[in-house]
Length: 317
Image (tube, rainbow, N blue to C red; front, side):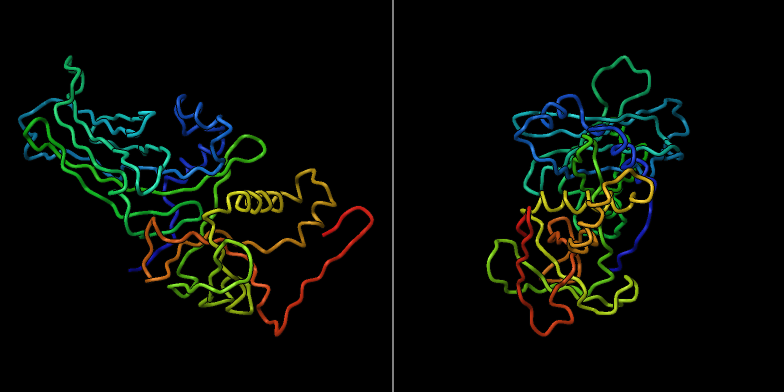
């Protein structure tokens, strides 16, 4: 398997989501998000319509125009839905975004075909696919998303096959910032590291750490292949929020009216490169693979380490 880094048109969809607070969510989902019990970390699926076409040989005698409806249905006590519809063939970018509720959810993506302008309210044909079945092996990594294989489905008008549609699933992680908008979590290209990764024994703490080895350190402006270490992010939502916020602040120091003391203080925090999808078992990765915080390895280049506690008049650190 070869992973490739690419920037597809769906990145525009991600930017639109971040530009307006909770723009990807329906009113019902907004109410859920506003609940104090809800987490600020949002895992999102974006279904892109890569291609949709009619079979000319079978449609030569038919003059009807057809509309396809793609609907996401959350199959739990909330029964939330979100959908898009468009005429086929479709030449413009079309995508449907919705929250991802994990590999154990029973959420469904429903494909339906209707005759354009028909008075009939029910669809002429419907197919349901489990959302988790649209994922699987990750074939490409962009800065803000993971991409899965393109899936093609036949379209029918009742029992007559009229064409096909190709869908690509993309997975992104968004985190709520202090301005009530979303920042995208950045992913690192797994091709930069030797996979699979191996766990490291540590004393204290609950998070697991993993040894990371850079294939070509110079590609990340580093001198050592052990420059980074991986930390399991399963229970590190606040930590992810901190590093994403830090990255955003540091990238705007020259133009933003930033506290100069904060700028100096952030120099003492861990170097952070992003999130790495990796596995302990094999080189290939999928949605269920580990998500590791890639941070500076303080053991790199050191023979012995020591913990230092400093005090000043106002703070202990």
